[in-house]
Image (cartoon, rainbow, N blue to C red; front, side, top):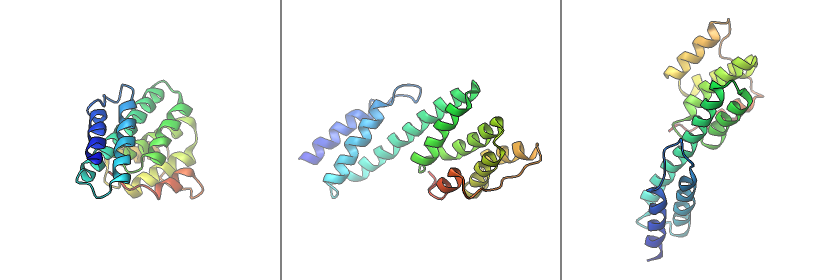
Length: 167
C-alpha cells in the first residue's frame, strides 16, 4: 500500500534525526515526507503517528534555532541572536521552545538597549506563560533597571504573540 511505503520512508528519515547541535536535514525530510502522507492519504491508519513525527521534527528545528541563537547571544552577536529567536517565535510558535525564545529576546533586546522591544517580549511571555521561570527571570531583569513588561502593539513580537499556541 502506498501510504505504508510513504510512512516507512518518513520513518527512515525520522530515525536518523540527530541532536540539535548537528545538521537537521533529516528533520526537514521527516516533515516533508510525513506531511505528504497526511495530505495524500488523510484517512490512513499511519496519519496519527505521522503527525506525532511532524511535531517532534518541528520541535527539533526550533531547538536547533535556539541552540544557534544561544551561541550568538553568548558571543554578544545580538542581531544574529535576535534573528534565531525571532524565527522560533514566528515559525515554530507551537513548540516548547517559544517560552525560552521570548525570554532570550527580552535579554537580547535589553542588552542592545532596545528597552521597548525587551519590555514587549517580556509582556508577551507573561501573557502566554505567566507562571514560568523564564518570565520571572525576564521580569527581574527589567525590574532591576526600573522597567516593567509593557506591550508595544506595533511590535512584531506583539503581533507574533497572538499566534502562540504553546507546546
